[in-house]
Amino acid sequence: GTGSDVLQAHFHNAEHIDAIELNPQIIDLIEDQYSEFTGGIYSSSDINIHQQEARAYLSSNDKEYDLISISLMDAFGASAAGLYSMAENYLYTEQAIQQYLQHLSPNGYLSLTRWIKLPPRDMPKLLATVINALKKENIAQPKQQIIVIRSWQTSTLIVKNGQITADEITHLKQFCNDRNFDLVFYPGITKQEVNQFNILQHAYFYQAAEALLGEQSEAFIEGYKFNITPATDDRPYFFQFFKWQTLPEIISLLDRGGLFLLESGYLLLIAALFQAIVASLLLIALPLWLWKSKLGIQSGNQNYRRVMVYFFCLGLAFLFIEIAFIQKFILILHHPLYAITTVICAFLLAAGGGSYVSKQLSNYPHKTIILLPFVMISLLSISYSLNFDQISSFLLSKGDIGRYLGSVLLIAPLGFFMGMPFPMALAQLSKVMPELIPWAWGINGLASVISAILATLIAMQFGFSVLIMLAVALYLIAAMYFPESQID
Picture (cartoon, rainbow, N blue to C red):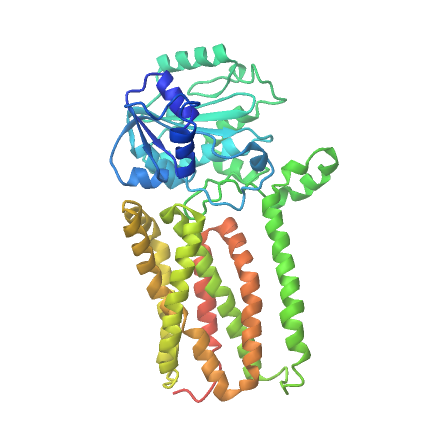
């Protein structure tokens, strides 16, 4: 945020301020159109405005800061309703927290503020993520560097690059007492000090902090009513709090105001998947089935079964990889729109090239040639998946041209080989059983309709690496079911 945060920094006489804002319209409104109304906060010589994504900015320099502040950037209403659960957010992952910590000066502070929802979700998940990040930074005692406070609507987590001192704790207590803020956690806090001003039925936040910073943190996360597993760059769905185990309990509370506990974004995705399955079966599979006898296709036909499995696997696998790359490249390209445009364009152009080359290869139906694209897809996908942290760190440090060019160059080889299996199999079918070609298109289309939604659900639940590995497995299964012919 580059409005109230900047005002606060000015109020406290910060000598140098770097304000990061991704949206150029926000900068224009504050800097130009409403400059007089905002008091010209951007005109001060001690402030630099950067129209950039936060992690990209940090990757491009080695500056150290006394304070890095990440305030609320989402609306409370949408957040409370769970509508952000499907959205990736790379600002609240373990890798992001590590990056922030690496840019703190000695004894500097990282401040993260989130909305309060009851039962607590945002702050416990953020705290769990921060704890993991600190451990990966070789901090043996994370609790010695963490402070959590709350108001009636927000909670703030503060991480110090160094151990918190007794003098700082004294100032913290005075600050909270003067402003009616509640202490949640600091090193050495007692239960009697919490839940004093904005009184809750139980000291939920204190209990969560104590559990997460204790020895039974994993058991606490596993048994918690909501999903508070730390967010990572591989699974950046920070706002995905839904847990299947809690669903029956929440449903039983619907008549007592439990609607906002449902985390509706995740359930809407489940409903969309169900609709996609029903629609694709009715509009694609059923017509094909009704015409099967007219085409003279017998259910026991070996090629019929092979076509079903082969093209269904291709339909799932292609979009599994494409969706995973779109989500991954949001971090590199900074915005879903840019990631979707770049990734889809690169995949389709490269796949078109692969399809063209496959026409030439189809004249030489040797097993090695047929297996080549499947092997290359598997090797490239696994390689990218294992090294994506290093790839993203490298590209984030580059300018716009470097990031986009690098993204296209990474995607092109994979897309090229992904464009081969479908036309190669169609060419084979045209020689063996041309009457199965409508089935090939139909089954592939059915899988494609389902796979886009299913891919998102898998990524939210298990991460992009699992999604890519599953796609690789589907491609290898497809290779085993390539339509039979006289192949040497």
